[in-house]
Image (tube, rainbow, N blue to C red; front, side):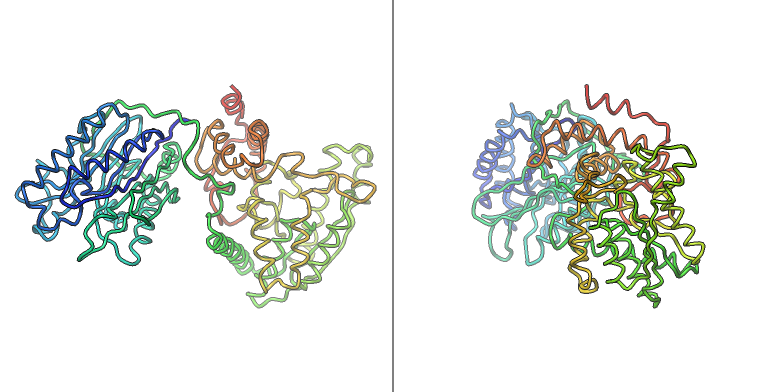
Length: 616
């Protein structure tokens, strides 16, 4: 895979005041890391001397020994193809600064960059290095292979503020730290690195001094981690006495896709360019979640889905109040999407002090409706206290077939779409009769794949689920089934979750079982939602999307199947744009989404260039 930068953030053992010994520790880590071929290896600030030397930093013997240790590391890396960043003290203008030496193939390739302030308490902290000599952090910029690196030494907890003051504009920040630890500092540093990577659309690699430093008056606990555009890829704290490191791959294409959404930031300081090509990685050192719409942890996922539901409810409450229309009409199919919609409707009405009966749930059984879905839809109406109405569409659709000259036994696209459009006509006419809003139930996955009938379920007065992919709707419903507010229908919700997804437009078999299963036709929604995220959010080429999907779903699906499903996604995504260009109103609850404020594309755009990139 191209465009991948492999970064190692390393914490060596340290012996304060013994630079030559520390150089050996650093060389040992570089030797151990050689097998994984990192592009950048970042060591903590002051790792050459140790961060806890105090007044010894002023001693000329220590400073000279540090320079000799850097020279030793330079010789050791002469044949290495990775950029190595080490920290040491340096005297400048009568003050001692914590500086970084950037080494590539045995040479220091950029001027040494210093902390914003001299080492405390050795000098006046209000005095900064001058531009004519030692470079402040904002001027330590390295450029190679179409991306830039900026070195900002300091505490990563302060990075969101420091980076902003420095006028950040790099793709990768390296933040070597030499600050002591206390209770809570690890979490603050992790959060600071994560926030800076999100605010400035970049990757952040950071590490800090650890075991071996003096234990009085401060304590040092090593840490190392990498974040990318608000995502924590790796971040851990030192737990033993030995060295530690985190090795992680960051994607320059992802970083550039997020940077393109921000105002341009100029790198108006001197830059050093080097000729270094990135490796074409066959295996990635990063976790790729199967559902990128959700955070990784169970607690974080629960918080996210709870917030999404609250936003859905708030959006509907606003539409009810602003329109002055207090009744709602929902077509209930007994499927995932319409079930979530009525749970939102019932909650919104209750919070506005309106009766649940103001929501009219309409069952419209047709040729493919099974007893299971019909029973579940009716159970929802009864359990939620809604107003129910059942209208069979079979007779009206058969009459329509006769009117237009279509054979009723021909189960083609006309047979299917006629049912969907008849249902939409019923819902809108009831809405006129009752002075109500027609609540759309279609989700983001269906919009992305064009899996809806133009002028049928494609239409609504207000759509609740249009920003939620099918895989997230499933997670959300499972969460709601566990809430006391819906305990009366929890059994129904679990049965709906276990029902295969189907439009139920074709007749069932003799036993009454569904013959038309959406995921058997299109492929798994989990794959399509994954493709959508990486295509719309990151603008990745199909070949790279395939690589990520193969990594994420390697235990479930073979690569050839993933590739074939990706072709289906691309073709349907492009061909369905004309439906999205005239979609109903909805609130942009989650990104990435297909709201015209977030994503635009011409209806007649061709997918051929993407298919060709994937298949050749």
